[in-house]
Length: 358
Ligand SMILES: *Cc1c(COP(=O)(O)O)cnc(C)c1O
Image (cartoon, rainbow, N blue to C red; front, side, top):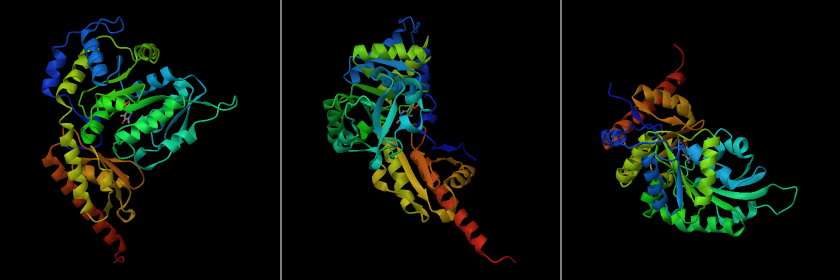
């Protein structure tokens, strides 16, 4: 059987040969002592791309979000964020554990919400209430389906929060996917936020690494909390070189991933027993539902991996597929064939169950 087509996440990409060459050629120092030239170069580059004064290179997107949250809040403060946020579901309870903050969850389709939702969530300044201190907005929104915030709506919610004295953090793990889809620049989103986190290890294809950007004063605090959380690294120029290479070579090509996701989504609409909302397929993520009759999403993914295609169950009937650098158009066609085979196999099994015992 050919190697598996891995659609579990865009984090599974392997560094390309060119990226590995860039890593091997990197000049390195000791970044805790502040003299790794490649880390310094990456931080200057990403800060400039996002129109901010300063940046800090960190090991993961979780650390990027959590150092930013810690830098912008005090224990007892409350964060306002969508109830489906990555910081709520996939960061091990870090806002509570590391910053002493609760999160007020907002609702809304596709991981988005409106100005009125933000304003209604902000608490009056009573001594007995938590202090609303930070709005976190995720773009693209992961659990929302890889959905893109329209720029005007994004700027309105951020500006409303700031008018009420809150800071704004943009969880931009996949901000470049959003920009490629919305045909805008990263600064167009970043200028409405105090801090932005960026992942190099997702669609951009680097093996490790994320960054936080913001004002020099905020990034100085982020750098302190990076050390406190155990994320300050030494010859990390090796990793920064991969991130620089990704920024130089892997942004425009995200459009290919988006086209592959659309093709996959379109193909799924034609398969009976599966349901998909094509409007939510805006970037490199495809979420779809498996009809109960066909079994669970977990069982579906198990059968699919026996056919050489890996996806992740994300709910009892919900499946997620993510396109990336290491997935070709031809593999998308093969994945669709495997999905159709698994559905046919599950349908046959179900009909077998219904036949009277001999
Ligand atoms: C992946 C991701 C992160 C960070 O994840 P790490 O695995 O810690 O790098 C943060 N936010 C969103 C929306 C993500 O998808």
